[in-house]
Image (cartoon, rainbow, N blue to C red; front, side, top):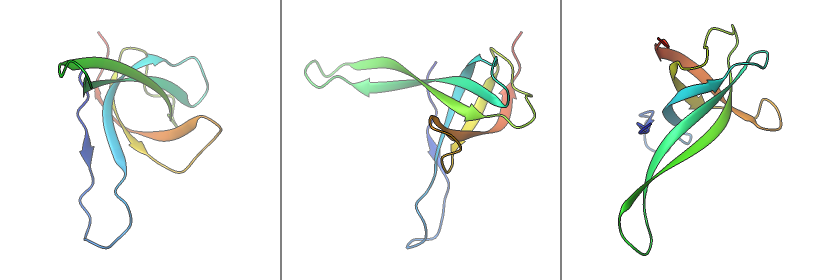
Length: 96
């Protein structure tokens, strides 16, 4: 679960770029919402080794198309609910 972090390219001086991650859908039990696990590699402050961390976020899934196990691309958006601040942009790979 290694995250691929990319940002949109915009002209300098324009609005902030939105965060974009690739993650795996862990749960699709809610209506129009999926829980996505994002794998992040971070440098340990003391030991200077790379440590894998997993962060889970809730993402809006309008058509209920993403299912558990799918690899999806999510994009930061305005707050949709208390915990939901991400949109599912596309499904990169279906679960087997």
